[in-house]
Each structure stands twice: as C-alpha cells, then as structure tokens.
Length: 160
Image (cartoon, rainbow, N blue to C red; front, top):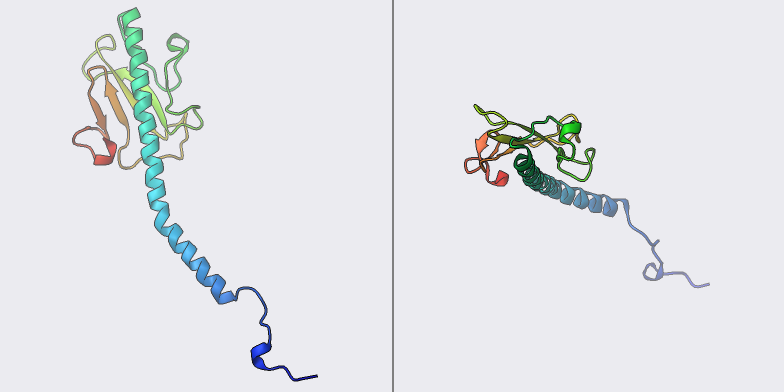
C-alpha cells in the first residue's frame, strides 16, 4: 500500500452549515424586500376589482331607475326586492375584499340620487382585508367618485 497524499483525498460531497446559513440569509433578505411590494400589488388589484364592481352596480342601479323611477337602497346582501344587485367586489362574498352598499346621496332622497360605497373588510366579506390608504371607495349617480372621504382628485395617487 502506498500512503495517500493530502491532494488525492476525496472530501465529502455536500454543503457546509455555513454555506446553508448564508443561502438562507440571502433568501430571507430577498423575501423581506419583496413582501411589501407584493402586498402593495395585491391591494391595488383588490382596489381595482372594487372600482369595477362599483361601476357594474351603478349600471344595475341605472337600469333599476329606468324601470322604477327611483334607485334601490341596500346594505350588504340585498333583500328579495333588490335581488340581483352586486353587493360584493369579487366572484364570491367570502373571497371579496369589499362590500358594496347603496344609500341616498347626502341631502337627497333615494329617488333623486344614489351613492354606492365599497367598504374594505366589512362583515359579510373577507374581514381580514384592510385598506388604510384609500379606505371606502364611493361612486354616486352624478358620476362623483371619492376615496377615504375625499374627492378622487385629492385622494392619494394609488386610490385614483
């Protein structure tokens, strides 16, 4: 037998603990940087979904107005008299971030003006969702829009 030299020895294959910890730290840092941007994108998507639902609900209100000469008011899930009105922003109530309600505009009757409001994380939809930036989105039959109680032009850029 010939003695083995240090240059011909085989080192065990695999990663050392230090290499694994460094890789884990890099992955954690990337996740830490990416998560806020991901969360912001999710909020924007849900906001856009709520705006589209408000427009669909306003179209339903206008059709109702042309047939009954007044708008229909409802809070959350509409009753049988308002059946068919959109009251949530997504495909199902449980998966929706916003709950839609319809009320008379301030200082007017429901026959004159309706204001639709999309409230984030309300009781009948996904209550875990909160939109601190824009809050409730509104649209009335005069075409006025607002976010967080301010006219849309004065609201934060992401709310427009």
